[in-house]
Image (cartoon, rainbow, N blue to C red; front, side):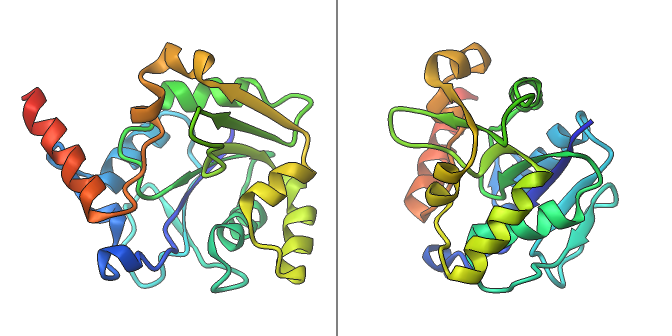
Length: 196
C-alpha cells in the first residue's frame, strides 16, 4: 500500500490567497473529493503544508521541513513523513483525479523512482507516484536552490505514462486538470452546470 500526500502549501496568489482545496466543484470541495478518492487507496493520507487548518479526520497534517520552497519542499516533507515506500502525490487544486487512475500509477512503480503522467501539454509531476528513495535528490536540489519539478524528473528513473494510457481512465485533460486561476475555476463550474 502506498502513502498519499495532498500538497496544500501554495500561496494561491492568483486566487488572492484563497485556499484552493476549499473551492466547490460539483457541490463538494476539492479537498473532500480528493480525500474520498485517496481513502480508497491508503490508510496513510497526509495534508502537506496546510498549517493551522482543520484537517479531515482520516488525514494527518505534515508541515514543510523547508518552508517557502514550493512543490519541491512539499514533496520533501511528504517523502520524509510517509509510512510506505511509495508516495502518491497530488496538488490540492485537482478536482477530478480518480482512485482508479492513481491505483494504476502505483502498479507501474517497480524499477522506477517516479511514475509521472504526460499529456500533449506537459508533464504532471504533481499527480505522480514517487519512491521514498527520491528523498536524497530532492533534499540535494532544495539545498542547491534548484526548485523545479521538471529538473528533478530529469534526475530520476521515470516511467512516463502517456495520454493513450491515461485515456483508459477518462479524458486526460480533465483528469489531470488543476485550477490555477479564477477563469479556470469558472470554466469548470460552467461545465458542471452544463452536465446537470
